[in-house]
Length: 158
Ligand SMILES: [Zn+2]
Image (cartoon, rainbow, N blue to C red; front, side, top):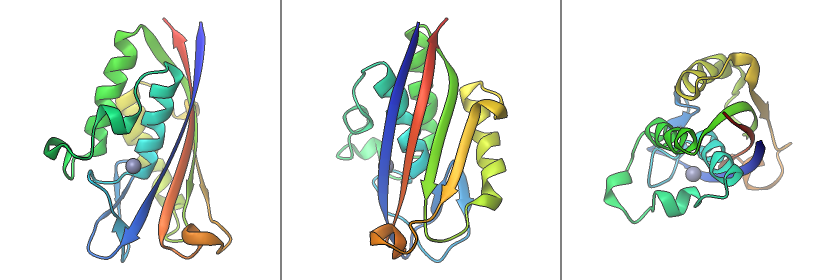
């Protein structure tokens, strides 16, 4: 049996924070604001994985009121959610995702993001798509005030 899930996330860009996307630290003058490390791509993928099995969403599972998750590395959250999926008897077939950012350019970082995420999720590079888009200078993302991400995940019962 197959199950499909969709995930979306957005975080505000501010000065004085590291920019971490797809488990990779990216050199930039601003970083994403959030209770955790605010890794917008990993959060979208997590919500898609949870959504595929109609489980609680990321905000319910890891509440931003819990000091335990303050500045936490989102790869730790991803590992936790992958364990949940495996415990329910599912594996990941493939993931398609977008990072929507006006700046900086994401393309050079995508191979490293794939290395990190594929290793955690036991999938091959050919089963993980990460696409970089801009917002054509429109809205908050286009004005470099935020970065957005969305993801679709297909799971298969083992
Ligand atoms: Zn988030």
